[in-house]
Amino acid sequence: MIPLRPNIATMDGYVPGFQPPDIASWIKLNTNENPYPPSPTVKEAILRELGEDGASLRTYPSASSELLRQTAGRLYGFDPSWIIMANGSDEVLNNLIRAFAAEGEEIAYVHPSYSYYATLAEIQGARVRTFSLTDKFRLADFPSRYQGKLFFLTSPNAPLGFAFPLDYIEELAERCDGMLVVDEAYADFAAGNALDLVRRHENVVITRTLSKSYALAGMRLGLAIARPEVTAALNKIRDHYNLDRVAQAACVAALHDQPYFSNHCELIKQTREFFTQELREINYTVISSEGNFVFATPPDRDGQRVYDGLFERKILVRHFSDPLLAHGLRISIGTRLEMEQTLSALREIG
Ligand SMILES: *Cc1c(COP(=O)(O)O)cnc(C)c1O
Image (tube, rainbow, N blue to C red; front, side, top):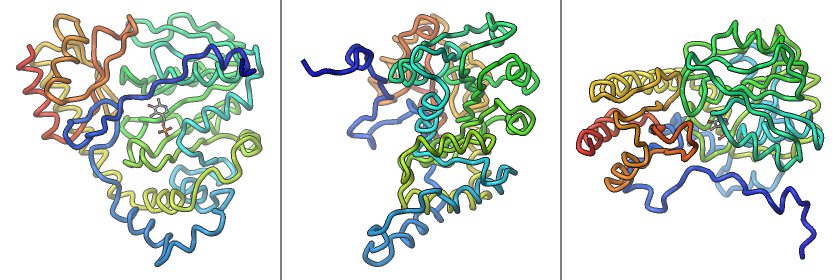
């Protein structure tokens, strides 16, 4: 027997969304990737970083991702000491658990939201508690004082797409004895965000990713915004060179090209509104979304049947077997043409 820790030996491990090998032959709407390429300045910056013969790769990258933190700090209105860069926001979520929750201590998240928090807690040996939602998308059972070490609030929520109002998030922050982590992976597609709460409450952390809104899922770039005491702790935990040179160059270029970024976010939001309306025309129930995806329920509430029908037509969406979600599908927003093709397929499937 290999002497693994028992929690690692028995855990299932997270299963990411399916990435088909023949990706070009699918309409791929299952992992909330951006349908558009990143800003053209990203490729230029990567090639410039590599240089003629790739010699820059001989030397280690900036350990503190200095330029990125300055750029992100300017963009979001924070001193760079309040920013920590991550190799995908998944990395910083992991390090938050390592920093705040010892073995046997409790973390919490909303069910349904991003189930990866549970996997990360399991690795750490932390206990997990979930809070459920009312039909008005508020927490059904959040205590007047929550004493767990960390509470992960995904807003906009994935997979449902709604966002919590700012004053409600603030009230939750005040009710948390531990840290409130607002996972804002989709905030760039939303009407608002919770950045102000980081300034007002010392227990609030915001996480962001460049995977979705900046079209850089393949590059693995995320960040957290928090008090310098928190970023200093997270800095002790992470790999010293967590972002490679190429990713750092890509990140700075992507954050600088705000006109390209805003135009493409706007396009995705317009397509989302178009797709939502058309789905409602064919009697789907659609939650109004502030992300780059919608959660849609067919009239017969059989998500699996519609998933299979789309799969046969080489359209990949996300179906969850979770009983709270099995009646619907999470469909990422692609190009206008991809969404029109998806709508035709849905009309055919009936
Ligand atoms: C996609 C996603 C992440 C992970 O982002 P990466 O930066 O790609 O690791 C985190 N949280 C939520 C809610 C997401 O949907």
